[in-house]
Image 1 (cartoon, helix red, strand yellow):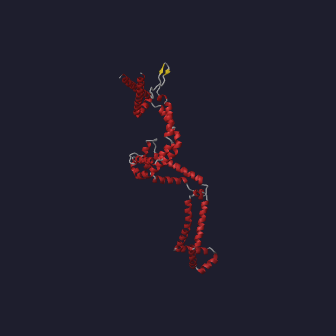
Image 2 (cartoon, helix red, strand yellow):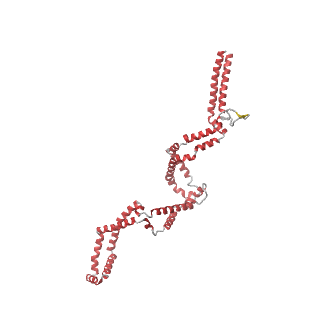
Image 3 (cartoon, rainbow, N blue to C red):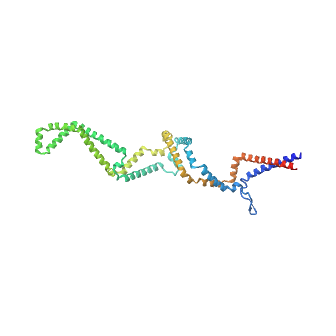
Length: 379
């Protein structure tokens, strides 16, 4: 009986010591929070492990985040994931729909996030300035080049087609005019003036033949000439020659006499009528935005979201180092209160810590069994 009591006592003592040891070890992960000094000397194991190694822990957590968690490859893979893209599109559409029927104007909404200014006038002024600068720079860089190097290939091809069509049109109009009474009268007047200006001999011939008979002979020949394929080839050749000469002239020759500033002013005035920036920026969104809802939601927004996602995915690797995330994580962890960290860890791992305590008690109990048996055997 005495041996049984002694064995039970050894088991209880072993379990108590094992559980207490593990419990104390868990506590010493965090406590004491500050080093303890006795007569100017720091006691061993103070502060606790985590407070003592907090700076190293902060540095390692920063490295883990940058090297294993927020990696460029991982972020790019996430941004290019079809399911993620679809979620972003859906979120963006839901957010956009809330703005189409707002009472506030686009100007008021934007001024909540940037310096209050009249954005409609600012945008118009900026577009004008940039547009005028672009046109001016383009003219300066192309004015000395031949027109054939300036015009788009499509325009030059259309010019060649117009030359061919122009010859047919000119001959057709000339023929139509000559076959009219007015055209015939013009031929009569021309012949009369021609004979009158060539001396007495020509006047004599004119009087002998008669102007009317002369017109009757010349007029059909003129019409026959206009219908002849040779005339078409000649007119086409002349037009093609003029077109080639024009293409070889410097572009500056075509702009000579053109008041570029006045032309651009008319363009901007027309654009202001066609593109109602004042309405878009200053009228309530509900007054004009709903008519663009369909095209914005289903066409523009997906393109913008996909393009922005692709750009971020491509640039993230070069952009990530500038964020210096390792230093951000290190500074945040380094300033994190140990009390809050202890509460956080215990809240997450309380069950596991309790099981560790029980395991310590169980192992201590087993050790107590062996100690008790050895003691009984030796006694």
